[in-house]
Image 1 (cartoon, rainbow, N blue to C red):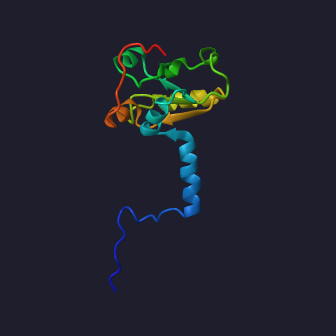
Image 2: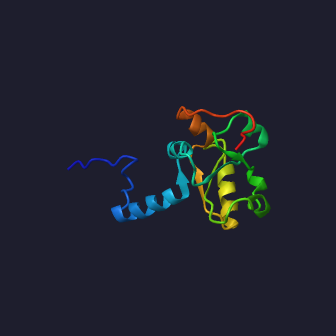
Image 3: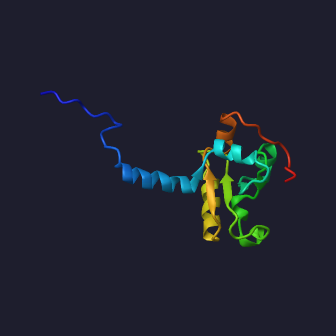
Length: 139
């Protein structure tokens, strides 16, 4: 009897529904995406601080509207004092080829700050067709 071969996709069976709920629920507590961030930035008052964690030169060349520039290497408590400790930060860097957002998220978490990473970074933002701001943002 010929049994169908499993593809590379199904060779390892999918997780159970309960495991998938736990995994993806947890994943969404660590990440947000460009669409959700874009939608939230259009609100009158954002309930998070959006940080572009790239260099000032890259920030000036183009960044997400409403984002503040705080390079991941400068994330220290002294530079966060303007925000209450419960402030949620959303961090991004250039994109999937860059780990600056991961470094920033780790540093914020080490400082006890709530944080999510915007997956896709600036390249993902542009891929979605959203506008970027050039120069220093006045926010």
